Image (cartoon, rainbow over all chains, first blue to last red; front, top):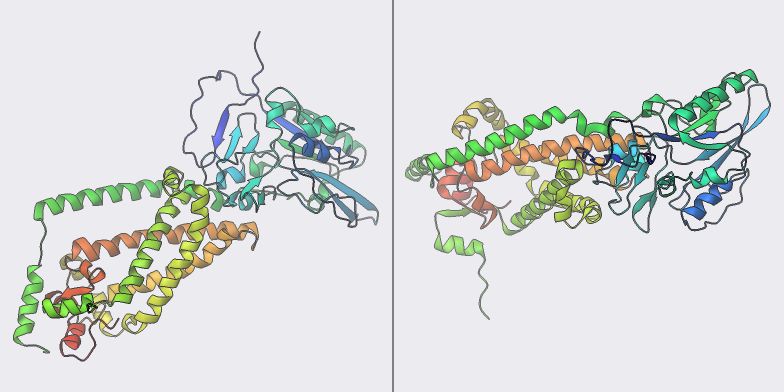
Length: 307
Length: 223
């Protein structure tokens, strides 16, 4: 009997030059890639996923705020990794639409947070696609906050570390679905292989189009290499009203170190060659002190001072 | 109570061939900027280059470095402000500096030009102004990295890019500065320890300044 490979080998770590080879995994078969999928069409905005996330991850309760709309908290926090964002918009024809979106980490294939992070091992990407923070290694610089195109990581001013959704890696690693998926009463949050989720998503988009949502789309942007939490968005024409960037990218400054990779080699070679040359020169000539040319100038001066 | 004798007075009495180039407070501030800059340099390498991240452990851990680095930057800037206040007159470019720049090739080859150099030569002035401008840029681009909530993320990323580029320039020119003031011109470094240089050194490198000091027209090492 073989056990299912859950793709828990580390693929990449922040600020770590080379990924180690892992002898435990059989590299002849590709690792399992997993994904969540949020079918916004099926979401009723009940916030069961928010509660389940708090409960499973043992996150402290935060006061809700009374403000217009159907949103429990104003924003994600270090203790709220999953938030149902609510937005009431007026459509082109004058009709109202209530846009509700589960906002949490999208587990990018090219994670801006991981590429921006300077602390070795503070951000980890597993082969199955999960991007997780290791708070023990986090130095609290918040580069990941700037690096993330989806504004997900949240800095805790008490612990001086950043937090976000782990895609319930502790559950996934034992073969369970994430807590939010388990709690969802309508099946709007799905979990499975990336392949299966793509198939479901594409099929659902076709159904939505047949129902008249002509701009329906599967949100899996290429600018970040694809996502491991995708959305089926019924009204793709107003993506930004859902709070989703139209074309998120991992921008060049984030990956600056790779940009100067060649320069780095030149600089290192020049530095070592310079040091070596200086050492050889010193051994050859010895210390010249006092320098004879200075003495000559000074002697001339003493003969005719203030000249 | 024993009379306190400063290093300057000792130098005057016992080593008549030495003159004061940098006074006590100038030396203190220069060492202040030296130490803060070295910390900034090493912690900057540790934070900016994954291969240098092991330095974080030697410097008290990543969280400590992330906390201290910005404050060291503020400390360095305070030293820089002092240097601007004290050295502004001596560091202003004069017409004689054009001659030095024209003979830059000769300076690189032989370490000397026939320029009638004052307290600082044109190269020193250029390095000084580079340091002031670079320090300012590093301070300004460092603020969004210190407090990321101030600006949109694109600005933070741009600030990080600029901080990186100017940091590399500062590191590169520091090597030149240290090399010239130690290995290339022996007898220079002591102006940062005891504050003195030999009369021969002064007459060779800074004849115009030396003549003024020697004629008593300027208090020794006024800046």
